[in-house]
Image 1 (tube, rainbow, N blue to C red):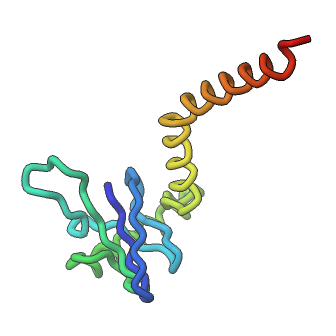
Image 2 (cartoon, one colour):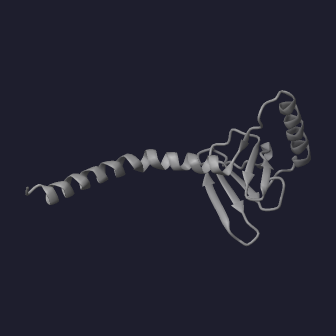
Image 3 (tube, rainbow, N blue to C red):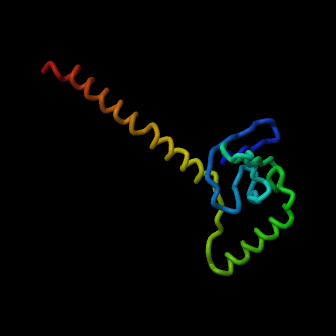
Length: 129
């Protein structure tokens, strides 16, 4: 899913994420994930999109915001009574997941390149002895 965060000063932050929670943490606070705020193309070939605007509680297109927020508050109350933690998609968790994906994608190749360069440098500098 592509998560688009529109700030008041005109910046747009786009990140790829997998949503498994009912709330998203953004720089301005928590936003509920509603069923009607996830946009998909008709054939579902592309990633789905969710647009969050800074200072607006529900994501763009959330027409059931009042019902969804009340259900999220009810879930929070039930989770608290069960002595469990809320499931919130935090900013640092998503950044850590993106770093892990980058590391899997490019880290192995980068590691081999560094290993090869160090071996070549070792042969050039120490090989004549």
